[in-house]
Length: 119
Image (cartoon, rainbow, N blue to C red; front, side, top):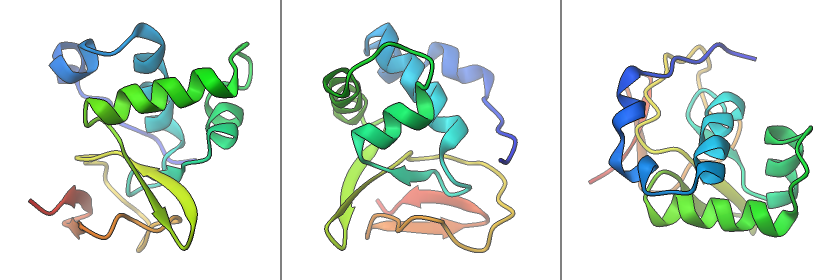
């Protein structure tokens, strides 16, 4: 698993501060499990298993927290070939991989090793 850099500015992120503490915690854990391009499996059961293996949370809890993160544009939820995925906009991690393990949203591009939403 690659190392991740969490920048100091995350503590003053207004979108993150607008979410519940539980959704914020899930966001940090998503940063850890996402691939080098910020993408991850979007199935709540998988998110719970990979991000919260030792926590007593339900699938409904995870669905709600993911919805919160999406509402505040902290994640993008999308489908590719009928399967749900999520991606973290402005992930800005140094990548070692040449391509994402998961399909990226259609409007995303990779520039200098960073995944971004085409604006």
